[in-house]
Image (cartoon, rainbow, N blue to C red):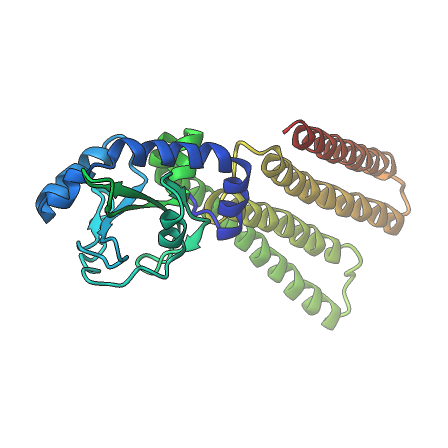
Length: 316
């Protein structure tokens, strides 16, 4: 799946903030156990991997002493084994999650921030652990990968598994479209050479430029279609749960078609005028009407889609 940009991650987090926080609080509440402070690094890793089998977005576990000093290395989750096992002895007493956890016996969840380990947006979940004498024994901290959390909750994990194959298919289609555009440009170049040659030999070149313009117009339309497909389906992240993403894609495709139809209609009109026959006037008018109708329908679609999205936001 195309990687979500940070702004998209934050926007989706804001939409589901309460659900995410409650889920993370319940996870750490069930996972937190004073016995974790007695376990070895291998046992901590085994406990975390067991948790990750249910919640694959959990990326890191570490334990803090009552003073906020880390008393274990960073234990990576089973899907984040590339993270280094460091951090033992680091002072975390100034971190927001530690300061917040000191002031309550509830599980605290931080705001999204950029992880210094993997440079991805993440959340930290922290809670106090008490000993038998009701004294603070230490703190348990879980780091969760925020984009993976959003994909997990929205049910996009399965789609992400198919995304590389789908991207490959779209890439082949885009390559084919770019190849066709290149062939049309080559044909336009040949037409241009013919125009120059016939002009130099004082031959009639009145209609030849139109063939060149037709080739260029088709090349432009196909190139724009290929570029739109490449951006929408391969390079950019598309949130299929948002109507605005679908509306953006449809708008770009229809706009490219409208431009191509409009140019073709003008070419038919000019060609008819030069031939003094009026042969293509009726066809050109129908093409113009079709382009205008598409433009009108596109405007209505964009307006109604935007109105529907506003109403959905108000309902939330």
